[in-house]
Image (tube, rainbow, N blue to C red):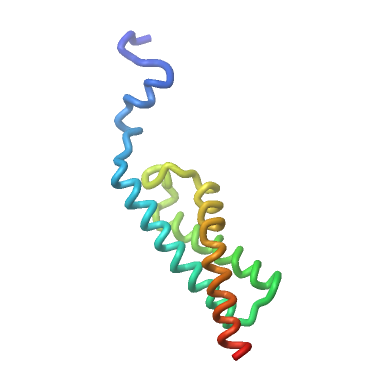
Length: 117
């Protein structure tokens, strides 16, 4: 074993491949959040225009979540570790949980405007 080679938790910190620019990471996460906001807004509007209720709306929400996240994975070339510190499952659950209210708000708004008034 090479005596200059570090072993342990500090070895990962000194590896240049593990260095992350905080500004770049924040920019990437902001871009992902912006894409998610717009797509869930559009998805909620589509659900409202189609007149989806209860489980049909939930199904549209799940489809929008899977479609948006799959498209983002393809967009980054399936290499999330180059752009974020979050794994794929974490990215999906964060997007779905943070944008659920946006989806419901626009779903109910467009449903009321199109089908009630």
